[in-house]
Amino acid sequence: MSIHIVTEKSLVAPDVLLPGDPLRAEHIAKTFLTDLVHYNTIRGMNGYTGLWNGHRVSVQGTGMGMPSFSIYAHELIDAYGAKRLIRVGTCGTMSEELNLRDILIAQASDCDSGMNLSRFGLYQFAPTATYVLLEKAVRTAKELNLKAVVGTVFTSDQFYDEKAEEKNALAMKAGALAVEMESAELYTLARLRRIQALTLLTVSDSILTGEHVPPKDRQNTFDAMIELALHTLFF
Ligand code: HPA
Image (cartoon, helix red, strand yellow):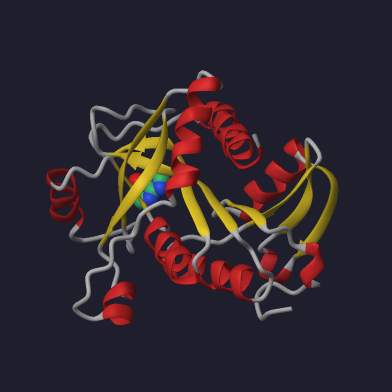
């Protein structure tokens, strides 16, 4: 038991998918898993454990942004013994290489957050995915015939940012392919705790053109990414 996830340790699997939206956690659990246990409802931040092709896996909502994500990731790792975490989210593309509906496998994360500055001071930590998961995801995407691009994301603290133009220009100059709000914390915490982590993102909008994937198409692209995450973990 911990503060924001209140359940028994045995009810959470070592492998966890992490959507930001707790309703996405419910959708993933009810669409892909059997033998479901709804193990967390605190603050409406759903956590489920079930079976996928006989493999035990949990799905835990995290909320948006690094501070909220950090709370759930800390508790999953420290109180419930999670060993492999895959964030499954959305991003805004900043690159012509990455189109709406594509999947981005986040190799590394650039960031504008104060969290690692406060953790490490002048030591500039490089938040990166765990290689074994990254390599497996790339191979699995090819096997499943999914278009997936590997690259760096910009993890931003502010969705509504008065300096968005300036920061996005810097991120693009640095070669980041897309913006989202959680991966830097996932990759940092995973390395500090010596566990495995990966972020998979579907492109829901474009910073370059302002386009969005229409709501009716969103679920299909999102579900293809969940297939990729589950095959990456278990095949
Ligand atoms: N900005 C930040 N996070 C996001 C975006 C965005 O445009 N799209 C999806 N997640």
